[in-house]
Amino acid sequence: MSGYFSRDMERLNYLMSEINEVYRDAAVKLGVSGGAMEILYTLCVAGDRCPLSDVARLSGSSRQTIHSAARRLERDGVVRLEAKNGRDKLICLTEEGRALTRKTAQRVIAIENEIFDGWEKEEREQYLRLLQKYLNDLKGRVVRL
Image (cartoon, rainbow, N blue to C red; front, side):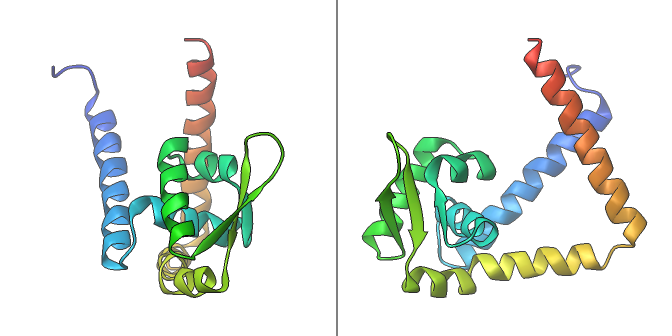
């Protein structure tokens, strides 16, 4: 099955896969599942509460993965699920959840910030510009599939 990708695409896919693996490793080292980490991380970004559908969209994980992780976190007292409108629910951090977030997702975010802050301003801008260009091009072409 070789020949489908250019060497650069193979490298891009490899790097993206490796980055995802590092995040999974971080979750395990910090004592939470990947799905739990995605929820805690998203709640750090979105605030202490967020619709579950937004968590799935922002994390890039399936709704089922996020819902399963949310149910486990709720059972453990880390989050509270509240009715929103329709079938969607709000996921809200509890005090225990805030403490767990400080020990997990906030540590990962601090690492990300340290790395990004270590880059020159031009490097950050170029990286973000190219990622945005790739995303825009990919979305535009997938729409036409």
